[in-house]
Length: 224
Image 1 (tube, helix red, strand yellow):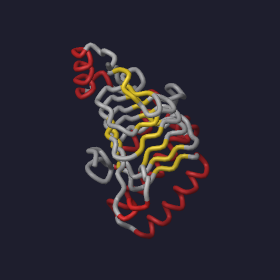
Image 2: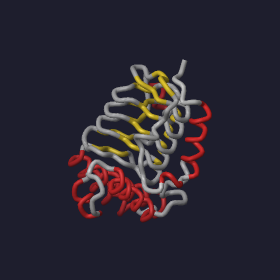
Image 3: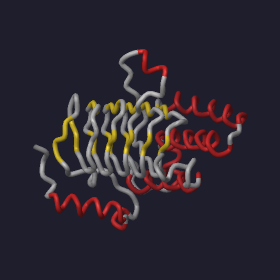
Image 4: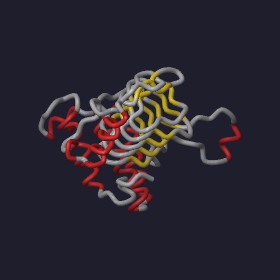
């Protein structure tokens, strides 16, 4: 699982604070107060409900609390249209700018990712034989941007700072800083998600700076 998930080494409060800060700093509402963001952001409601359920499942192991939070999560799903599987492992700083028809299965997602409306992240099952074992699922790195209507399905790894274009179908791995578009998605450049994913202190993030340096050295040339 990704380092930073609340079931591994990240505190629940810290993860929720980082989620909230993404909306305050780089969300669709601009730089508003915490209360304003909490009241307006359906994506934050869905993420908070997921984190609480995931924390109880993996850290507290309380069946009663788990049942209660599952009920809360289902209510949030009905209100927002955002369904996040409690088995997913998601790093802090998740930003979902808009509610509506988002399905996130038991995938792995890194830090400071953006997921937009209409996105589906989950398994790819073509035959019933897969039901006898754990289905292959996507893995997203840090600072990944997934555009509206995109589908990422099956045993797919999306590298750090990658960008998935709107309405794309991703069924193959995407390299770090890769930009993919189409059905099926193909690599169109290596300019990454640097202008799309924004968060507080990003200019001081050593991993992001290293990725930007690698992008500059490569010349950010379009894929051939």
